[in-house]
Amino acid sequence: MLGVISVLIKFYLDGMKCKYSLFKQILQGIIKLILPLLLLLVSLVWLGDNISILKEALYVIIPCELVAIIVNPLPKWCFDNNVDGMSEIADKVLNSRRKK
Image (tube, rainbow, N blue to C red):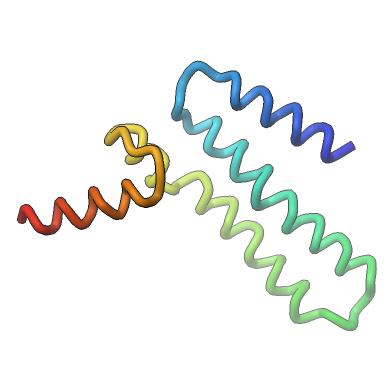
């Protein structure tokens, strides 16, 4: 069921006319990062107390990643500077440093 919902959300995001939006960034982060981490945490809780340190780490990592998804400036910067791939980002950053 979770897989079907994530696929439907991906189709919705691909169909958005705007290349960048904060809503799209948050949904993609939740699908690609938060849901797998939550699934891992639920499975670890189900396994028991043998892996308590890993569970405690996930209790800290999941909220931190949720905040990081929201405040990540890189997707907006890529949209503003017409950057499509990571190699282009590296080239733009290196070229801007050389010009200074």
